[in-house]
Amino acid sequence: MISGHATIEDAVAATRLGARSISLEKPLDRHRVVVTARNALERRKMWKEVHDLRRAVDARWELLGNAAVMRTCVGRSPRSRPRAAAY
Image 1: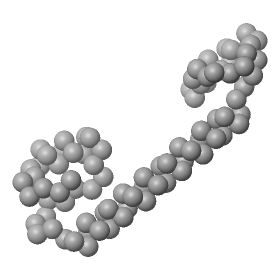
Image 2 (image 1 turned 90 degrees about the vertical axis):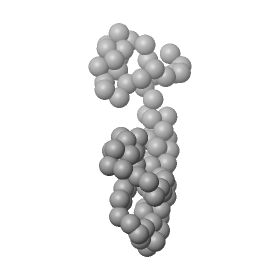
Image 3 (image 1 turned 120 degrees about the vertical axis):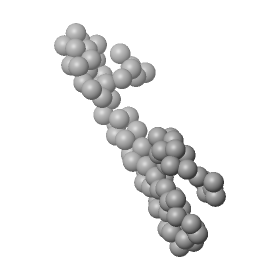
Image 4 (image 1 turned 30 degrees about the vertical axis):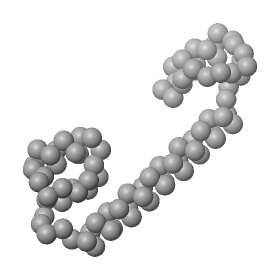
């Protein structure tokens, strides 16, 4: 978002909502805007790639079994979550 009426409070609120780059300098530096936009697009591309790779790995290494010991181990894992597995 680019605004000519930003305040410090607006910058803090934007940061809390996920803003990555805030500049309160005027006049606006066009080069910095281009670099910031390019970095944001690259960051989004990398996030999507990591997300897709994690999903692929999770799908590949799904645990099968319904033994009490296995349920206890999976329940203690911080990364465990319900799955539609063939139990």
